Length: 68
Image 1 (cartoon, one colour):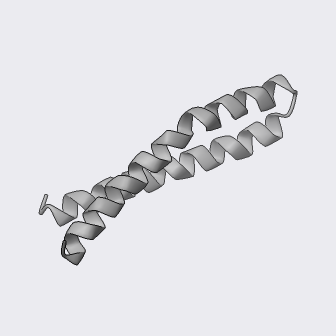
Image 2: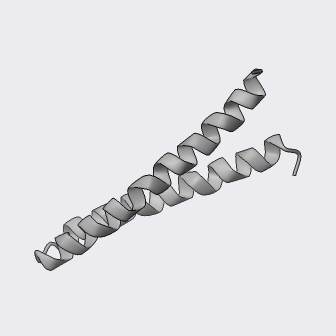
């Protein structure tokens, strides 16, 4: 496997890894809100949004590797 193939594989792996955490983030956002800690919920929500932005960038990198 050459480096470009490895990079594409890693990007796909990182996307799936980030997505695997989303459900947990959403659960703990809700639990924080339920506990009256909107401040904590907002920080977790911000982290979720950053993770989603990372995935958008990883997806763009994959498209660039494929020449799209």
